[in-house]
Amino acid sequence: MKVGVIIPVYNAAPFLEQAVDSALSQHETVEVILAEDCSTDDSLSVCRHLAECHSVVRLVRHPGGVNMGAGASRNLGIRSSTSNLLAFLDADDYYLPDRFAYPHEIFTRDDSVDGVYQCIGVHCEDEESRRKLDSFGLGEVTMLTREVPPEKLADALIAGECGSFSLDALVVKRDIFEKCGYFFEELRLHQDTAMTVQLACFGRLVPGSLTEPVAIRRVHGGNRYLARYDNLSTGLALWNTLFYWALQKQIRAERKAAIFLNRQYLLSKILSRGNGLLLSSLLKLVLGSAAHPFLSVRALRARRFRGR
Image 1: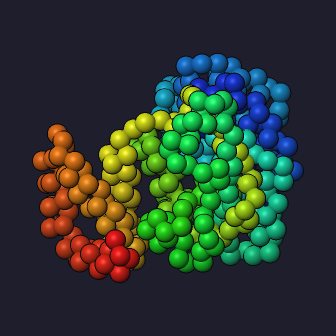
Image 2: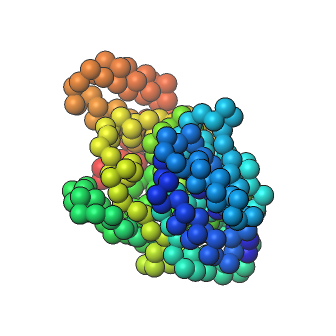
C-alpha cells in the first residue's frame, strides 16, 4: 500500500518537523505534501528545509502565496498528489507507529472499500490546555462510539448519533473526491466535519480499530481546537453549505431531509436567542420551509422518529 500524506500548514513551525517525521516513519508513506497557507511565523522556512532534506516531501503554496484556509490547502494537496490513497495530518499533530496497519489489511482484503477511519488521542502541551479541554467537555479520544455499516454511516454522522472521526484517522481513495466533491473552501471552520459527511454519502467507509489511536491531536494555546466561537453561527454555516451541496448532488431524499432538518433547527436556535440576526434568521427559516415543503415534511417526520 502506498499512501500520500497531506499536511495543511499555517503557523505551526514548532510542531511541523515532528508531524512530518511521524508521516515519514510509516512504511506506506510515499509522499508528504506540505500545503503552506501564508503563515506569519517561520513555517514556510521549516517547510523549505524539510523539502530539501527529504526527497518525498514537497512544498506547495496557493498562487500569489495568499492565505486561503485549511479547506483550500487540503484541496491544493489533493490536486498536487500522485498517490491513489491519501491520508491527512494537521501540522501540529502527529501519527503513532504502524498508523496504516489496519488500512493496509483492509484495502488489501477488500477492493470495494473507499476509505478506512479509526480514532485519535489527545496530548495537552500544558496545564492551561488541559483545563480548556476539560472545560469543553471533550474526551481523550475522538472516535465513533460504535461500528456503523457503511451504508448507514452518513445518516449516523448527520444525526449525530455516535460521535465523529477525525481526518487524522482517515485513509481514503483519491478518486472519491471526484464523486463527492472537494473541501468547501468558503467554510473556515468545520470543513473537515463536512467532508466526513460528503465522503460517507458517496463512498464505502469502514472502521479499522475504534479503540487504538493512530494519531495524536496536540492541544495548545495557539490552535483552533479550543477556540471560543459562536457555535450556532458556525454550525449553521456548516449545515447550510451541506444542504446546498446535497441539492446539487444525487443524495436520496431521506438524507437530504436530515441535512435540511439540521439547518432549520440551527436557524430556530438563533431565532430563540433573539439577537441582531433575528430578522435574517426568520426569513431564512420561513423561506427555506416554503421553498422545500417536501423536505420540510420529511424532516419533521424524521425528527419525530428520532425523538428530537
